[in-house]
Length: 425
Image 1 (cartoon, one colour):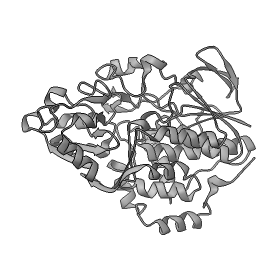
Image 2 (cartoon, one colour):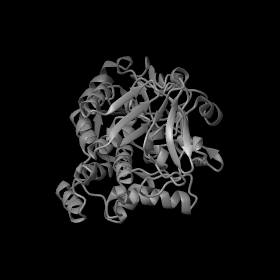
Image 3 (cartoon, rainbow, N blue to C red):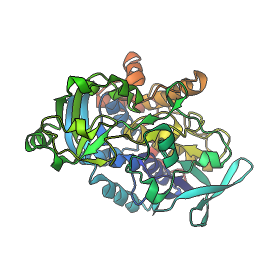
């Protein structure tokens, strides 16, 4: 039984792991030369409700990626404005470690292999076409292509191609599999009928910062610098993907986090103004290269799906990550990917697919995001365990906890302990 995953970001890797553990033959097709996608520039884990979700996914039996990330964390239990107990992983070295782990599991990884079309019969996908014309058959498909790109979207809805880590000019544009299957993609908005949202952070070369700032970053993991009052721009907060960081503190201050590079917690910031700040006189952007002008535009390709993450309208297509809704973050990608991979094999076996109960944070966010998007036509909210509308919900209904024993007991009482570890084939 052959599972084909289109997209090798965090959600695609997570889907591959659970599908493989369930017993399928698993192939990942990634258009660039690296896995993890935006995971190569992110780096923030376990902040706020993400701690709860990370421990839930471990209890469910899909903790491999969380364990790798934890082992490569440079700072643990870090607090910064609006966020508690964050862990920061090393974005410069994580990708090869994840890739080797997948290869050791005998997951087939195909990089620089862009999927451009599908063959479909009735309500089923039969196979995929690569950009070189190669045709590959599969039994079930999982789309984790994300919602960023192609370049035209960044030109139309943003400030042009920001030359980001996804590198569309080199490796080609993202292709929506759901659209190729004849389905309508849904778009998020940052304002009424203004589609998409800017990626929420940039990377600065740590070496370009002053010695004092470098030392503080290395020691404490966070540096906060005041923005000159004439340069404070509150309006830009509404443009960000990451609403959990759209707090006034992120407009009034330069907030730097140590993820191996200096992670600048703003979508973009004019270089001449950045260099006015003490210690940043020589600052240099390394992702995106146009971080002084703009950033990549996301949320332009979401699939209509059920709460088991099966795409509505195609019987053998599942989705995860940003393709499955207006989700923000690595933890969210890993959680949705893990469920999609497991359910893909359940589908192949003719077993009822799994919908995680709302008593779990993972099951609740998947259901809640779908309800808000499809039933309430809410295209502006984003959903993350770490802040904004969903973290407030977590706290209100009692889902947020940092008690690992409590989380394990809850998953066990629901009869779901290590369910993703079960071999189905």
